[in-house]
Length: 146
Image (spheres, one colour):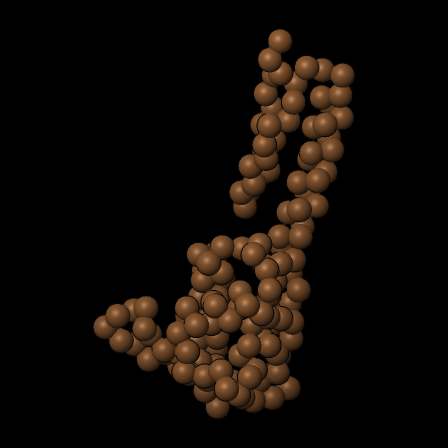
């Protein structure tokens, strides 16, 4: 049995939204939109935000903190906070925050670009663009026209 002294680690933005007494009986998309608004950022896409929110909802469901009310249209499935939710202490996990992940990616991109630009210094090549995925950062380089 989960006592009030137990803590659940959760994203700070999700804690802020779900802790509001007015935020209950919600869909994944409603929580996603609130999360995007809360983070006040265009850094992540709606698809990424939905996946992130849904993964966290599943964790809360498994712990009995939320109840799912299924409908025929899965997009309209509702989630309700349980009594257990209200007795739980939440702790922020800054590592799970999407914005923090994106900030780390930004730092990696800057380092990668600095290295690439230093290696291009004095050559006829120019840096064309950067491709970022969850697993890698790639700098594409083109030769300058002669």
